[in-house]
Image (cartoon, rainbow, N blue to C red):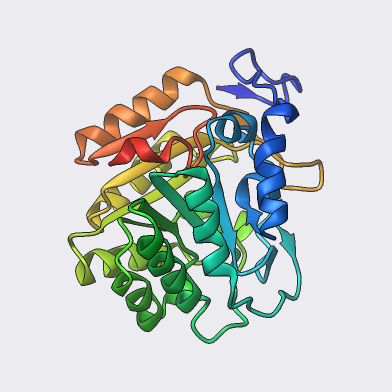
Length: 284
């Protein structure tokens, strides 16, 4: 590991460049359909690579989050009213792009009774009616509400994902409003309700966690029945966000990947630039 007190420069393995030209076509489509993507809102470093391949992760329920996670670049504040036409516009984009694997995520909507579960369900169903694409949903914790989890699962997504993001010790520092055990329970409940639907989670490294803590998180996730896992390097969107504490070497990501496979995960993507929806079609 490289401690940032020793060096402020990114190491050689973190040299990916964003090519804005590769993004123009998809930016135009999303603008025309008035859609948001987490790729753009979260300043994902993979945006040009994915956009050039016609791949994107749709961000529904607006672009303003009711939580204040210190690692995330998504806007915080009072969200907009729900747009009932959004599911159909997402489906239109899926059709125009010819996507075979679709990832749909959202801001956290603690202001809504169901946390936005109904819109997730409508989006899944609308895509399935229009296209034969596999639909992966990356959901918030819905405050742990069983009814919301059930609503999403009844729409039959191919993958139900919820990210733990980090180790429990760091939740208070980086995930205010979230709860480690509650997030585990979301995944556990999902697998109990619909064992035929794949479950998936993701964590980011480099914010002060220890190797022992990461291994413990992998075990906790697998205990819920979680099938898929993504592990990536945290990169702070700006100086006002939670600072990167360490740059994790590629070899360490491989160690975690091997450990995850060893304890039973079906598919694991682990590397500095891996994000929860990066190369999502590889999982199934």
